[in-house]
Length: 458
Image (cartoon, rainbow, N blue to C red):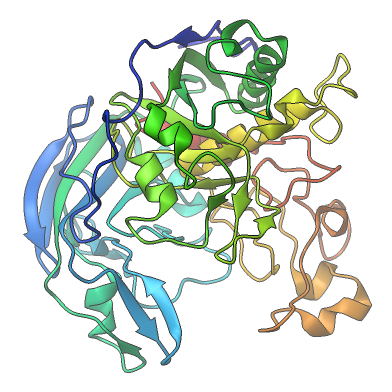
């Protein structure tokens, strides 16, 4: 048990450069081999999609994580409705508990509010992905009342979008040839009131914000403030910051146009710049944060995205995969003109970067956006305030709610009235989709539970 006082430890610098000495080739059908975990896992070996597997859950198990990593994935994408191309995400399906109750089926679309579902899985997870239970209000309550997940034999089916594509009429390009390495983590005990998580920061360009280098960061007051603010945010979730390790990158990374400037985030393929960057993460049970100077779209234009994860959640304790990290825009670290004595991500650059890191690490530990940008889908927790476009957008903008072209976006200023009827809240939550002046990093009790139930947290 730790005492989350909001104090960050002094960072340590690794003498190991992250990544191999030269840039490796990338095969999108087999990007990386199965990587080892530093935690105890049940190894279920390599299995083809469609294979039903089982795992024995002992009494008192607090959380279950199913990790799938591609071994041979020749199908990298599928096409919906003739034109919409989707990355071939891997996700377990037909998850059943010992009573044979169906807890999760990935084929039907989830409800907009999944807090009453046993299991929720969202986002994109090509080549590798993790499902952690509990991650909904329903299952958090069940495990709390029962003293853990239902003990006995659980079953699930190895699955990806390519296999699902063969089961519906509006999809092409699917198949059943893909195979994955499967392993399961079991974390004993209900999530305690506090826990500790380690961080690793990777300095991708030579200078973050044009000023802060890997070698200078440990004693740089701006970087130290960022770590302190990160610790303050996570103290609200009952989480202490443990070990902080800094990594420099190999020279070929720093000189590559794929990495040393704005990074393309429109490419979600297993050999995209982001996926290849995350494969450079080091082994260990830590959250890997890659500090970059910005992001761009496929056309090369800079975009107002401040961070992105490999998958939600990330693969706890496994480094070196296409989903083993998150990228955060660290360029605002240098802007201290309006930094005062209190946490202020809207005005203080290091605080803003701390907020971005905390948000992306929240995704890595299993949290989703409380309200998505279109205001038509929400997270899986009942104690986070929601902000539906149909209720909370300005009246004149509601006719564009959910529009295919130029939909109304739910900015924070629409979502800071939780006492209104209907409620329009969540804009100040750490996991709201947009960073703005209303952001203060609020974390709900159930969000803290989900984070502390993750095997990443000790």
